[in-house]
Image 1 (cartoon, rainbow, N blue to C red):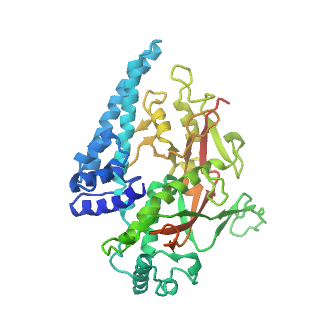
Image 2 (image 1 turned 30 degrees about the horizontal axis):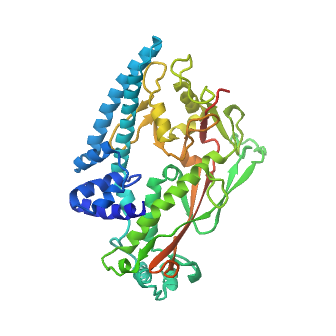
Image 3 (image 1 turned 60 degrees about the vertical axis):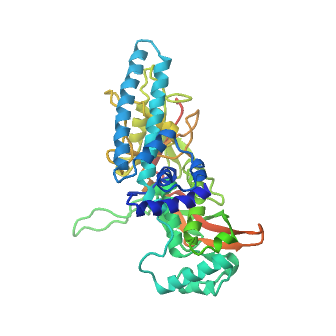
Length: 472
């Protein structure tokens, strides 16, 4: 994955040079990189390292023009129409008490095909943001440029040249701390953050802020009127005292340690800042993405699924409400009197209307494949493909995002979340990514111990609900 991340950055630069449009960010770079390999004959072995679905590889390889996302979207829509027709045959047979194993396998294959097409579309759509790392850019503050030059020299040769003082001068920090490594240039940190925002699904949905300390604290009004209605000349009665609760989000340290040979570092044509960003960004994104869903909050973010969960009718602040699937171990079968789509409709309306305007679904790819078969009471499928190349699929007309860190469907599990994540979840980044150069531990290689401090947690327990696999 580390090698792929670096090579993707190189491939994207070459693709842009050939006029290939990279219209938006992407989750993981493989599909776009495969296109570059087709055009550039870049190290065939690297292409073999990338786990591409065979169909997706073919799609991307032959659609290397600006219309690629549209072409994939059109095929996705056509495939979904085929899926609906074939799945309707299964549902019709079930009503007659019949079953066809061959037909079921056919539907499953088409369902998998839809997932592959959606991944290919996502990867194409999000390429630009994920690869927009490295380089000094156009206008840059002279102090920042001086720091960048000194950082590059230290990175290659280990000569600090007053780098700690230049950090202060470039306004990256207010104090010198050479024992803790050196701060990467600001544009490198921004590049890493862009990749984090595309690979880490919860980060892309949540509100993200930067702080300069280890902890972010926020006061939340738990109730109690602090205002009232009065006439122009009437008395102002005393209102109830508001109940405030403090929410504190601590940052934990996440690290990665990419390695390079000194020979590679001596290569003046190698953009080292882009290399570093490519090496650590995917590692950071995968670690924090898992923590945002299930982290226990100890030296890491506290995940959505780690809070106390209660039936939505018993919801109280500090807990996350849930609705149930209607079956003890899965979703209700199509042969039962209970419509499996009803559980998602219940979850939809469990969220207050004020939060639904900006709400979206969160589930794994496997769960989405199951939900794709659900119909509402009128016989319409509740899952719909994207309406445009830059959009995502919808369930009940709300965007659905995939994160394989979410629970799989199983007894007592919480495989689906629905909420306004901008209001529900907060990601806290402590400003500054540090690098400690280590040329001794793994001679003749040079290790770069890279650290970032990040925290996360729920800040509005009303704004997100979960679906629990249970029948009561």
